[in-house]
Image 1: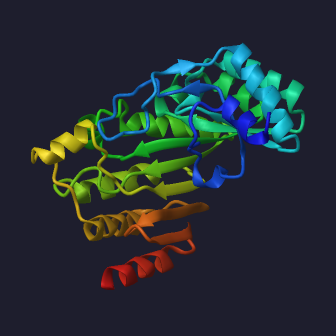
Image 2: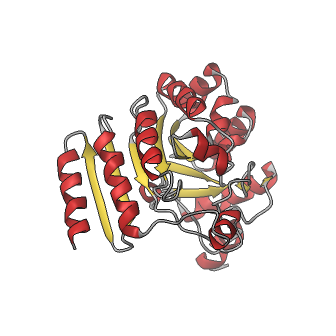
Length: 285
């Protein structure tokens, strides 16, 4: 088999969605779909949720070990692979040690409730085994927006889960969606999200501008006038308000979707004023 055919044999889809900071990380597909699959804005959970068998995962590892023999970091691919029970995660890590012995760091997508289902002891064991980073979509810190968008979590649960990760010394990269509250709840969305983020210690805050995907409940809400979609400029102003209220430390803030063609990026708190100035400049164009 060619290298392309080998890659095709271990991934279900042609496109692999990895977070920006994991683009060069080796990816091992361990599951498909999202265990929640109810968020009204999401278009990524197109597959029925399933966790691959250990036999399938072992095959994927064998092939990946041939394709990426020198990698030291592994992304467990699935829309929230951290929903797996701790013992299954350990089984995957032990298989990885057998086939890819250079791997010493693990990372994956997670939901907040995936974290809450694990005990402090389990999180500590996973960190000692090599779990370094979780990528989590928190989306908003406003409970009314979270409920309306059927996220299945509250801001208080988010804070609780992230503090558990802090205690276990597991890093987390968070995704926030400017515009998720629509024009009506824009200010509340920005301020409440900043309030939530100020109580935890994210390594990264990634703002992913809201996009309305066809065939999603939120798309249908907008078409029937039940959701007041914001313009790119309004979303950028909302993001400015979010940054203005942030007091996090040692955190990289970035937005790669500003006005669809610009990137705003900088460390907080040191670059806060520069970030605000950059947004003011973009708003003046």
